[in-house]
Amino acid sequence: MNSSVIVFPGSNCDRDIAVALKKFKFKNKMIWHNDANLPKTDLVVLPGGFSYGDYLRTGCIASKSKIIEDVIKHANKGGLVLGICNGFQILIETGLLPGTLLRNKKLKFISKNIFLKVLNVNNSFCLSYKKKNIITLPIAHNEGNYFVNDRLLKEIEDKNLVAFKYCDEKGNIDEDSNPNGSLNNIAGILSHKKNILGLMPHPERLIDPALSGQDGSLLFQSLLSSN
Amino acid sequence: MKISVTVTLKKDVLDPQGKVVSQTLKNMGYDNISAVRQGKFFEIDIEESDKKKVKNLAEEFCKKLLSNTVIEEYTINID
Image (tube, rainbow over all chains, first blue to last red; front, side, top):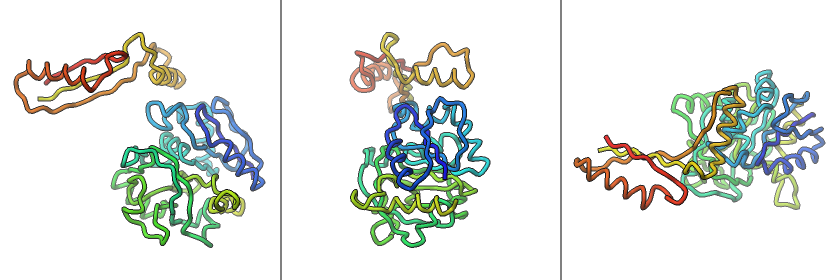
């Protein structure tokens, strides 16, 4: 499977995701944001970080980059797009995913492991979570408080487009297990065609048993098995 | 009454965010942009009807809290 990681000024998880993709034998290319053309690719990854220093709004300036036009074309043709953390914020600013990510409810940067419930396993990103649907992944963000208007919230819930919700270790989804104030504990959402996933947690950081776990590996295995 | 305060960086202080916004607008094809300054905007509701008093208070808010007068300047509107 071919993948392309888009690198913006201020991205800082681009190499982490490249290491993860390499481990799972993706043929990966790093693509600079100012390149005009996206090479032929199955998967585009928008990595985490602080593109453009979070100027104006998180992900906003990156969403106007030259390469993004091709990313939008790729997405509209049904190509896979994965946005992690700042990548999720960028996807939202491009309009490929609905809603917005506000500052965390308690106005603090949160960096810790949290529990997630996988709510939709019928998509290319989550197939392998059929075996295990309560997982641990790290979050590291200041703006991860998902917000959307009532109409769209109902739509994404009704159409089962919420891929991940914050929960406790038993899988309870409630206010106590919500780290950042996200509406309905939403941590990650899919596009209507389920070819775009944006999520705040970092699956690329949990791919090695020696480094605390493999719950992130399942996402990459899903992508490979969907190909 | 309602006080509106806009705080921006002084003209001779470098505003990197404003510069990036300006460059992005140009990249989007708006090539007649010559400069962008980014700042903060406050709306303050105050229970006081004496306009002169409100203006003095607003000045105080700006100097004591809302702006850093070393690098920022402010404009006040009252209605």
